[in-house]
Length: 289
Image 1 (cartoon, one colour):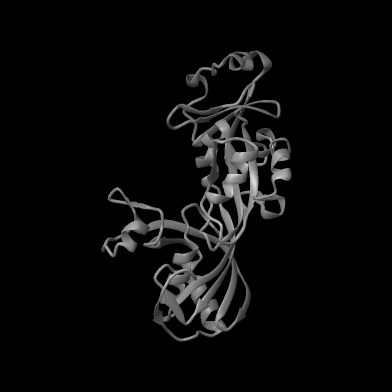
Image 2 (cartoon, helix red, strand yellow):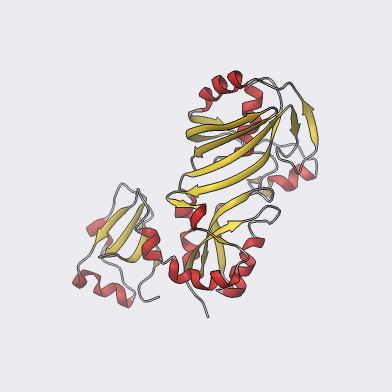
């Protein structure tokens, strides 16, 4: 039986994001997905969905994220993480140099994703082409660092907390920071501590089956959506919302277009449907689920 849930998972190191969904699929629903992949060497928060709520992943993927990252200066790897081969060496910068250089990364920057990533290039995964030794380029993209804080620096390891936008690669950040310091570096450790207003402290260990079975009730869609910011909410009267209980939506022409990309139809605190206002298309209608 399909069950629609949103579950905050704590992914462990050396488990892929896909693998950490397996207990969820066995205990709640075979149809499951997540919003935002974490590399295998990384750990931390993953927002997962089951059933029809998998349609919501793009909304959650667009939320800002906070990471705690450990950068190792003096060595560079081909994958920009500890799983790769060492391909370069360089000097160890001092703390003052790092502090001054970090100022250049605050705000919106151009960033080139790692070649060892799941991005599609000419119809193929970038990491597959890299492993085959093919030469290719990945276009840069605009991403943002909203805030950062140096947590510690014990040469050659820099531990830093950063709040970033959608599409930000922390591995690329380590590479680019090192380049700006005329040296080499790679990412030793990475933990995602929050996505939007949702934190790792709330998450369930991905393999804690007993807790997973309760998760659908603890993390209801209504409670999750009501904590989200930056979305237009339209509150309907019981009379206006009545058609929605029979699978129909109110007239789009009455409410759209609206500047916000996503519109959430509400009756009180209850989520009725989530609509992509730009495409004028229902993403998820959740009445009577």
